[in-house]
Image (cartoon, rainbow, N blue to C red):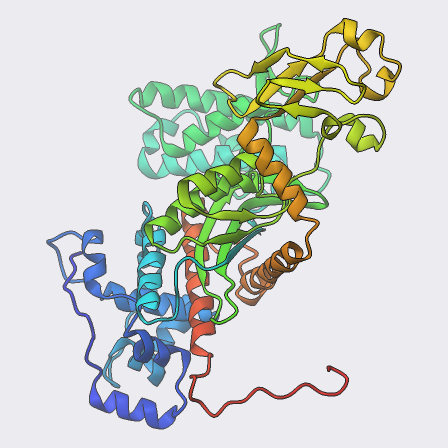
Length: 537
């Protein structure tokens, strides 16, 4: 399929006249054409299509339909019907009133094409560039970031269901591509175990024996596939092999058996939870437990302008602070870096603050995590803050006046920390040693000079009323997360896989931006906000 650029710059006169007569105040779809002249043009998608082949539909039009689909929470069939029947959709796409539109399956094919590489991020970047050129977005303004969990599209499985369904997935793939491999392997018992999707009750009979049987079947199947495909097994076979490694082992007696708690289980950050969605991970944070991903949403929070989502990051569940470098790198490419970035405590670290300031000239504003020393947690004794650190003399003075010059910079693997150790002779005769350390001497770990000063300044700023007032604007990100997760059905993944889930999140962010910007009143409009009531005042 090739691309024949058709920008759709000219709206048919009859379509324009009927749309404006039926919607004198305009709609969200009409705003896209009137205010920003479309979010994309076909020339933006030239690299996505080959040069030869039959002409395809306009990718700029398909991308616009996808955004309107997410803005109005429409299915693919409903979106295709809206293109065929709604006048404002035809106005936004530059179509004649008698244009029949397209088949709904085209939208799924376009999303698959959008999930390749970093195309989803580039789609968001192109739209933000158009919005910026229209004067609706500026760089170097205050922005804020927050995250929320997203449930995977795959069903949660027990260990027995997981291994059984993984074997069934391999059998389906091999039966479709190379059915001769299954000759003399699949019996009536195999057909009974793997002939249909696995659905077990909460307490299946003989679960351990059944798990051992399924594990032996999987092992035999993989051995036959290795002999049949020496160059590389099918994709589902690789997934099955990983699942077997995670849940089975060969013990000292040579038996192939399931792992127990005593044998140890792989950590949740690498454990596969579904053979059909291998990127999803089981995660627990506080009282929240889920199998899926994390989505990080960054938006502007300028008092004089409408808040616009500038970045969306979908990641396998991990620490929030690991997402910040990628967010800043993408915003830098779009020239939309903030001057002040408001985040919660999950994103902050002294090294992260220093890197954001040095690499991007971004002031990361958020509370640093408190000290984790046993004395600080207990609220009694001498913590690190009670010691006097002299970086010039490379000495540390304890609360009782003992000075230690045993200063040692940690190796290059962790160049941001320094360790100082007090001698056992100094601590041994200290009358308050019990309040300082349970051992014979005290070792002190702290950041390097630049990071230590940054940490001290941040904790002092947190006591300032102006800092707390500025940081209070970060709480508005929770409203955006609520709109993202519940207003646009973003809590649960619509598609399987990390790449397609990211496409869903990018389209949702674009839909929110279009909705917000299209509802703003012009500066010279007649709209006036309703004054507050006496009780509100």
